[in-house]
Length: 273
Image (tube, rainbow, N blue to C red):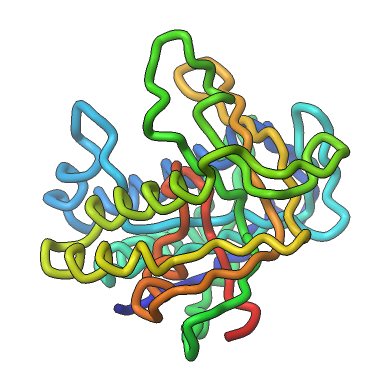
């Protein structure tokens, strides 16, 4: 199992401050990736983006704003941002890398008519899993969807579960069934983004996978705009441990964890192994 990672450093013209809408900046990077794949390989693009139903993608990403960036209810004011991208697929990695190099000087148009320039794009060292227990931190929030809740009366918030964490100012003991849903999310992810042989191997390892929360997680409600509506989804950030077979842990580091990974959720980084 391979891991390909990059980081691109974005600034505005003359390095002036800029503002991005809180609910739409992730969608702008999703659009950038979409255009990158379309320019690189039309077959790959039509297989994953030109479909009636959304198809899970073999990547995850995170957007980190500069220290001192100001976050209010609707807007982020920043001087710079870092875009981190991770995948287990060299074609996706090459497509995104090429696109970032292309927009270094001409920039890319973000919401609010903000043009940002990818001034530095670097390939990151590959995190190596050396044991069957690793400690990780979230780079973007993790969303664990409950696949059983699909009724029309179910709200978006009820479709996502939280582990033991701090939530709304109090200690939250975790939603019932979180670990089972966590594993089911991983199984569906494996089915969607690996070939039949790899899927069979990795899915057999899922029962050995354990999510360990040790009091360093914070739950929050995260918002994205989709089709003109704002979706509100409980998710979590912080530091936690994963225990399981090394190939499965490597897969999760490469492609992320949980739902909406291709929309800027679920990216993790290795702290210790």
